[in-house]
Image (cartoon, rainbow, N blue to C red; front, side, top):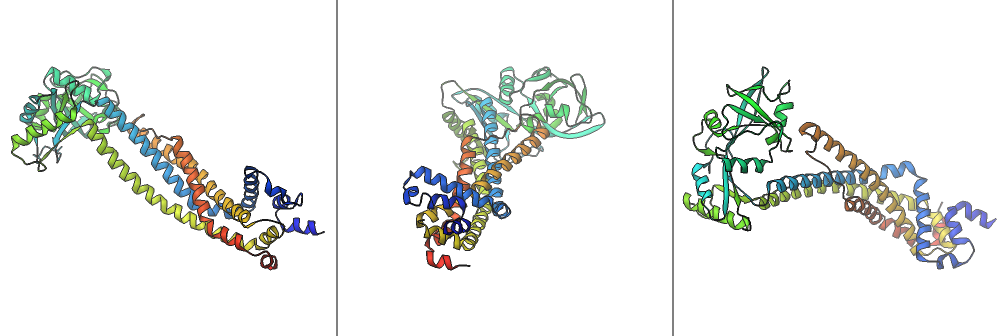
Length: 436
């Protein structure tokens, strides 16, 4: 009778572990087996309270989902940026005004062909080119759109550098020659998305009121600016933009075997000396490809930290919820704890059991959060690729992200259960057995 009443009052698995074979031999087994038994018991206890467990893990899985989605998208964006800069090459140096102007007005630090000549003559520069970037009105099939207008330099070597810099390849037709007049090549978005009808090679476009023949449609490069651009000869661009010598960007290619950063320093000194400006007071910037990608990564890292910090608030709320539930569980199971202690359970056994239960709640929230986070990330990836073209963004799910999220959620749950578990382990058997 005594064994039946104990087995009825106490969890069956706990009874089997503590009472049978009615000695302390069960507690003298290996640590691994003991932890496994506690884990099984904890799973059974959590599964008995499904609705409460689901509400408890709400805060955890929202936070984990946000972290997984943000980190995976951030990693995917980082991979995309790295790929773009790898195509540009580490030997490229970008020179531009600190305040970029695309509308035609003279911005502070405006570059001109004069600066291009200076850069061309810097020791260590093998080739340099400059081009204009302006907003331009384009009309096709009675539909007008404003897109970016670029120009290809009017020199063979500079044109080759310009095309390689932008990774231009013809999807149909051919690339624009620096000798072409009244002809354009267009980005993939201009060809397929900007107008109600697809623009093909041989069609005519009205660019700022002038008629141009389309000689080539470019392959998608994943840059919305380049994919949504119209590229024309330098002479045509200067006439349409009414710019005699202005340049938006100058690109220099360092000689093979020469450190691009040293060349960049020489370029900066040459332009600063020519403009009679003090160091640190320049109205222009000079950056290598490596420096530019580091700047992008720094900005991206800051954005990720901010959003992950916001997601951490949800994890904190989830942890508080687990703590509340575990305190409630201690009160509800006070008599059960007393029975466990009466038949031989130690304080460490009770402590471990409640810690594992709270950890399981956190882990369950983490698992749900990982699944939802992957879904959110894939949905954003799909939306961006539909909008800007396939291959624009590919979210990444490194193994450390998944394992780390699950481990972190388990730790959050376990830590949240420390106080309730300590309270349960400190209960005296006699007092606990009297609890109704």
